[in-house]
Length: 145
Image (cartoon, rainbow, N blue to C red; front, side, top):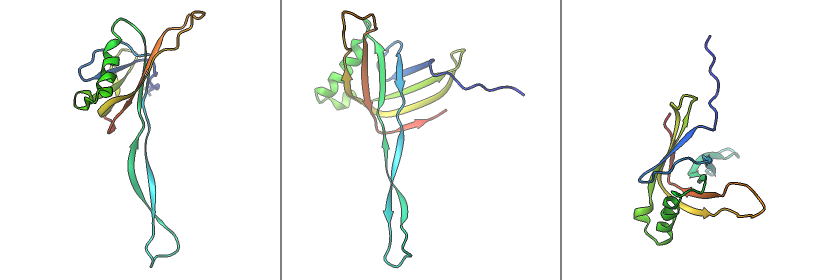
């Protein structure tokens, strides 16, 4: 019988409409949840029904080391700060790959826009990589494969 090992979380791609950015060191795929709404009619037994409420999506978080090409993602955030939401909304895909770089799992995010930018902490005594972080709000997440 063939053995199916789980995929490693270190090989992934991020596709953002209109932005070409090389490697990301981290992509934190958010959760999705629905709070139950308790409901009861007056003629029912003394227990409540639970019906699903609104769907909530967490934010996607991307981290990368600063390079010469890092301004494109910062400029995307600036569009939001300038109120240009029509230009800022993008579709995003995060693709998990196997050891041979074949796509295996794909999460898609619609109407995404960066709601938080975090610049790196700098320290002259250290040797760490300067990491930028972008938190991205969106209006829906689907795992398509």
